[in-house]
Image (tube, rainbow, N blue to C red; front, side, top):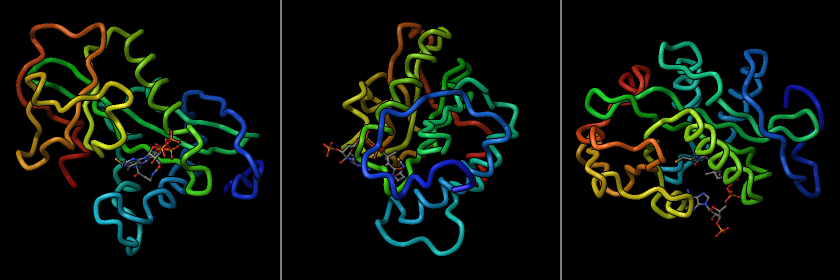
Length: 191
Ligand SMILES: CC(C)(COP(=O)(O)OP(=O)(O)OC[C@H]1O[C@@H](n2cnc3c(N)ncnc32)[C@H](O)[C@@H]1OP(=O)(O)O)[C@@H](O)C(=O)NCCC(=O)NCCS
């Protein structure tokens, strides 16, 4: 942890403060992301070297599709406990959002921080008039926040094999033009 309280020794996690990421937070966020993804969510195995999510996030911070108010940190006592980013994506030619990576400090997982970050993202995106959010993630986690298999809403994944792991949250700004294949921000194409 780059500063503030040593979060890994906190006995209880108080409710985190959610705020937009600032460029000065990035080193600490990248460090947190490396820890959160040190066990692959795909294979469940330990990752050798830096997880790919760290390089992806570094590129997302600097890409054209970066949206400052949708890079959100959960802060506890001045330390960063979690982070989520959503960047500009498209369904066909229509602007949409792509969420990820999302990570919570390993010692603070399962205390509602990821949930708080996902709800804050949806609230901010809805307020901005966005039609929806797409992500690639566990069907065991995201449906509790309203995500459904994207194909059920007419949104196809960038890769056919993603199946029910490719999920979409429809927001009040959803409209009939949202139909077709989703494309994430450019840095995802290099994965
Ligand atoms: C996924 C992650 C962001 C969730 O944040 P969190 O703060 O731990 O989550 P919350 O406390 O809000 O929610 C916890 C609940 O989500 C469930 N959950 C968390 N990750 C899950 C997953 N990958 N699959 C299924 N359920 C999951 C927990 O089992 C728990 O459910 P329960 O309350 O019924 O036991 C966090 O665990 C994390 O950083 N994991 C490592 C990185 C990662 O996998 N990122 C997402 C890639 S899609």
